[in-house]
Length: 218
Image 1 (cartoon, one colour):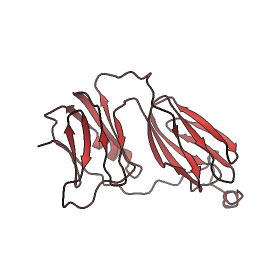
Image 2: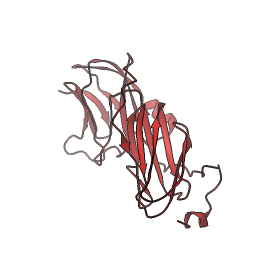
Image 3: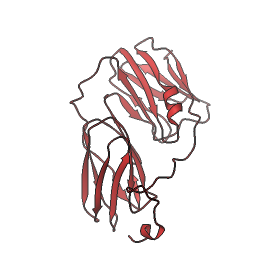
């Protein structure tokens, strides 16, 4: 029998060189979408290897995708596909940057050169938000619309398993971290995500409350 994690009604199974999360038959709720799961090996991997370029599109006053996971060193493009200006920034942990005001049909790029979670906002439209999780390991995946994930091509060895989800507190995320000896006899681990609070309200890039009139001017 495949062995791995158990999360609510989900089971993460070690099969060959991959780790996958599946839902057994007849079970109910599953973990939330847009979560990130990653395995950090005990022996560091080559951090000079980056992932392919990625995009966070601005369309209909939204970032798409809302959450993206990349390797450290990856360059992300921020194209503006709305018919008005955007002003993209991040000053909360992760990679601080300020792309300034730029018009429809143009794009700016940012290289995420350090690990961590970067919360992305627009200085004009407070309803816009996204998160970039930059990782030092190539072994990661995002949960899909069904709350499922698969991490492939994982060599046998010792790993630290970590999780991130926007609705979880830092304390809960820290408590979910596990050490894992990955291989044919991978042990069963259990975790349950309790938090469901919406992200806290954020300020603009100047540390001020958003002005309502300002958000309607574009």
